[in-house]
Image (cartoon, rainbow, N blue to C red; front, side, top):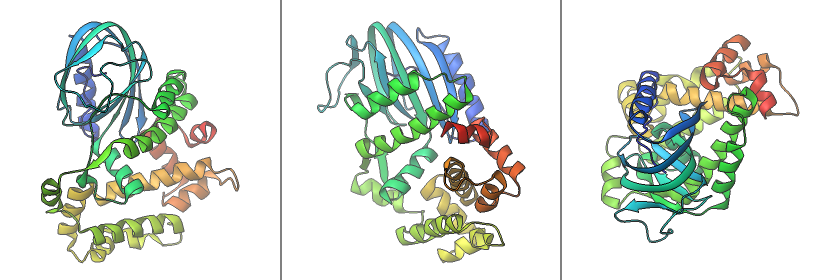
Length: 319
């Protein structure tokens, strides 16, 4: 269920500005923020309570998954709604509000709900990994009062966790990553052909994108120790796309919403988290750092702490 809260795209400065804006707008609304948590990877989780209110969404610039925990029967969306969904909500109902979504809502009675906010960058990673597609060619379809037992279960699970407890917050992170995979399969849809053709201009060709991303994954899978990182230099990746470094960097950003370095950093961190959860064989922190291209175990620790607000040991225990 929307509030006027927004989460900006995923630079640190923009995130800070967005946090200030969230609380400034909510101070003028009846919606009450019960708790919130930064999950890392450009994801934010929030739990809200509202009653007897009228509010709206106006192109927030980020995507929102909303699932009702309590109430919803007396919530109405003003104007058109999707014919595939119910006329009103109930506990377990979900709403998908894309970055360019606009709608007005009338709230009667008590309503408690969970919001998961994600940036375009987080969405792009899932489109590539799950659909092997150009992220700009897919968008989230808006859904109002949809029903899905997986998403309803996700909301109940994260609501039962203590987000101030580091280990439980990391468990919420893992649950939310799985919920987003489900969201892609439920609500991702191709842009209209004309729009897709416009998006294709200025980005990497599909074959070049696949070569570059496959090389990044192969380098990470092989391990970046023992001098194996040359294949991830800007020059090497640009050569794979038959472009100059300047044009490659620009086209990569157009296609994937971040720089090549930013993409590699995200994928390196994802692999490190996966290796830390690996039980057999359980790798030492130094081994994980070497496998993923971090300069040292302390470098890995600082990176994970900055991204997740947790140490590698805490992430391992959360798995």
